[in-house]
Every structure is written in structure tokens, then in C-alpha cells.
Image 1 (tube, rainbow, N blue to C red):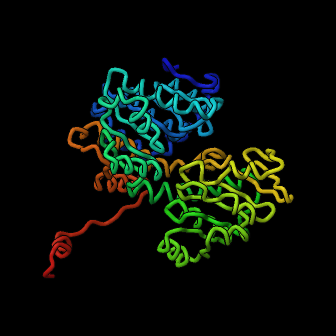
Image 2 (spheres, one colour):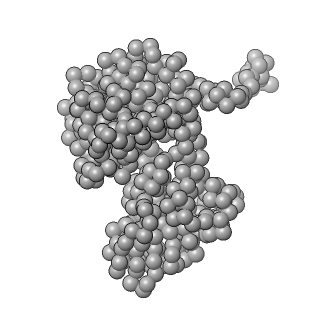
Image 3 (cartoon, rainbow, N blue to C red):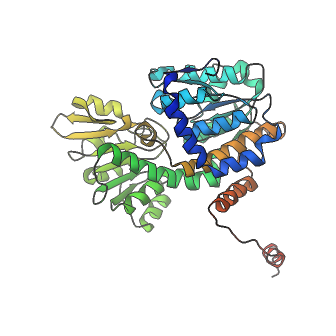
Length: 421
């Protein structure tokens, strides 16, 4: 057990090791990045603080960084995103872990503070963040550690939005990389990863069909596009709700109905939020929903569904299946909430497929590597990952699956550069 780790039960480690080993075997891109870049000594003497859901793919990323020489400390954004067997196994592999699914939600910030304290214990560090949790605390309760932070990379759309808000206000103290905005992240993780894993979680936990049902997707960003696409592929009749008229038009052109949320509330049988905003489904929507409607959140914040309002309007609440709560309303209608209204594919499932997170965590590893080497020349602002790194990750993946792309000829390059041609 890594010194200082706080996990629920070390005896759970054997099953966690099996999960991590499975992820490792299906992560050719991260393995290639490890072999080509991470062994050059850039992580020696460096701390890495990680805030991510504690499951097998995250665990393997942290193991790779630890094997590259970093002193890695990890915690989860909350207890509902923790697999205790994986946390126990990770603590046996040289990573300091502060994670127990039995911790009360209000303890989450304390564990993130422990990560910062450990990662920056007498050494510089880089951060791999989720929803800006570590960066927020570094700028508030752990400002004494700011000088040692070389930079941070962010996993989520909502976290990047917070970084940009800090930059606008002039309070961001170190460089950050919007890992979420890398093409090899959002085009695959947000779209295909969220699409598949969200529908998988809903189906596994309800044991109900998607085909034939009216499924309402609130938000048509990359996550919403993926959910709508996978739902349609399973035979659902999909309706999209949006506040952006261009995205609404895009959803229409993609073959989906587009309605205001209050109208969609009257016809939907399954509702999935994917907006990154709060109160997207609230009391006025619950009042219009049909008996038996299923609610789930796939977005990056846990307040997209107003669960407090839902609870207040219910005369009875009970868990009717694992991860499924029934809310009996005053008029007898029943609404079903999957995964507590939090990110459903993590609170009620295993998260994104391994091959998808292989891309994402290759990007995250390269973000940490870039910050370790280039931080001195980076301003305290939100940066994009250099395009050539994105391209290389894609090439590695194509090579791993036996595919490839063409290159332009010198004549083609000259033609594309010239305005006279």
C-alpha cells in the first residue's frame, strides 16, 4: 500500500488489478505515448495531482505517469465516481490514493486538497483536473502552493468554461491546457464515448428497451450529438432541445425533431440532459411528464436535473432497482431517476469504453508532458494542445487498428499555399 493512501478496503485490490490490467491491454495509444515520450526523465522529481473518477482507465493513466518517475496523487470529484476495488489496487501500484465510495460528498474537496498537498510536497507539480476542482482549490484554500504549480490540463467542457472565466477575470495564476478541446478528445470521448456509455448505463440499470421510445436529448453539443446518434441507432424516436438556433437546425438536418423543453416534456419517455448548465429539467417540466418517464444526466455538472425540486414534489421516494429511484408525485405519476442525477455513465456504469479513454488519456499524458517541459514559456492563460500532438495521437490509433491516411505531395502543398494557382 502506497504510504499515505486512504482507501475503503485494501482487501478489494485483486479485482481492481484485473480491471486495470484489462484497460492496459486495450490502450495501445497511451502505451505508445509512454514508450516514445514519457521515459525521457521529464517526470523525474515532479508531482502530478489528479482529479478524475476512480475507475480502471483513470487508474492506468496514473500508473503510467508513476512509472515515468512522477509522484502521483489522485482523488475523485466525488464518492459516487469511485470504484473501491480500483482505488485499492492503485494504492498498491505506487500511486497515492484518497478515495472511498463511503465518504460523504462534502468530503470531496478535502480529498482534493490532500492531492494538492501531496503532489506539491517539496516539489513542482502539474495537475490533471476534472470540472476545475483542483484549480479552484489551488486559487482559494491552497494559494500557498500556487508558486509550485507548473500548469494544469482539464478533462471536461464545464471545467474549461471555468478556466476561461478565471482568465477573463485576470485571476488565473498558471498556464492551463484545454485537453477537452483537443480534437482527439471531444470528437471521440464526448461524442462516441458519451453516446455509447450513457445508453448502456440507462439500459443496464432499468432493463428496459430504448427502441421505439421517445427519447429527449437536452443539449446538442458533442455529447448530445453522440447520445442522439446512439439512441437513434437503437431505434428510439429522438427529440432534441436546444437554446442555440444553429445547433437546433443542425439537429433537424440530422433527422431529429427539435422542440422547446416544455413541449418535449409532454411527449418524452426517456430524458437525457447534456448541457453543462443547471436546472435544465425542473419543476415545470416534471409537472408535464407522463407516468413512468425516465430521467438521466450525461452532462458535466450534477445540477442539470433539479433533483431537489423533484424530491420536494414527491410524496414517496424509493430505490426500485440498483441506481434507479422512483419519485411518486402527488397525482400518482411516477418518475424514475437513474444515477442520482449525476453523470449517469459513471455513477451507474463503468464510464466510456476503454478504446475511447485510451485516446483521451494519451492526450492527458501528453498535456502533462508538455507542461512539464514547456511551462516556462507559457502564459497564465487557457491554451489549446498543439495541433501536431493531436495529429500524432490520431496516427498512432490508426496504426494500432491497421489503418492509415495519405500525405500531400510537394506539388499539392504548393498548390494549396498559392493564390495564383
